[in-house]
Length: 339
Image (tube, rainbow, N blue to C red):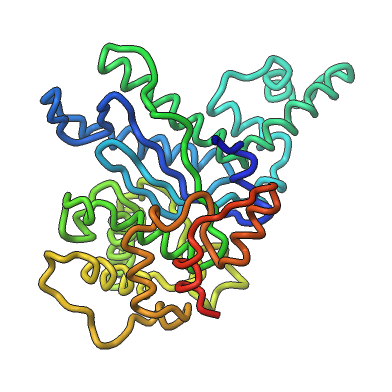
């Protein structure tokens, strides 16, 4: 039975969500289509460019992404504080980057004010648009509609391009967030498209590695940062535990994340000659998870959970909050959260 989107996304409980969307009719987002013989590699650029635009307009941060042959993954964070702090001018300015403006809003932008008889209507519009700027559903609507239109035009056909509504998983704690991000970042390697993280095209891990190396070069040469190519998507940064109180971001060091994802990627691939190192990655020690539990959970994140991931008690509470009676993933959750 289909679950209402409002029962799957509740930013007051958790701002982090894993999003998946898949094509229908053997449609391809990118790569070589064996049925038509066409190459759709350029469609990766479409989706990454649109995500970049939307992340700048919406109060939603991108933690991870991976664009595959016929589906894509996103890990998103709703920035409630930024959304609530928007002024009416900022709300209107952002919304008009995506949609044609309402006449009252256009008047306000052009003249700086509206008549007394229009103030209430303007206030209602601003409140509605401000709510939408923090909505993953609206974020996905803007993303999927444009990609579908462009793909249908290119394929000279009509009808649905996506198999249905996007799927979402609530990520309730740092273990769930890290495990899901790693699952997303390792998708191309698991699919056999590449054997290295730096060659995993159109993924957040490749982008982060490039930016990390560029930053290191800047620090080493003391060159002007304007000479460095700007990132495709403004990813939510890793800020490190020591900066938690000062900066908004993922509360771990990127170097530790890179060590863990490299270890995880080599450990879960049977055709890889490398072996699990004796020393457990620092980040795995930091979050208190055993090697076996981590690898079991990371091997197939989607198979372990449905609409929510995290500590078992929080998963049950999340479902019960919306009247749900069933929750999947007890064994995996308890192994990932032993205490």
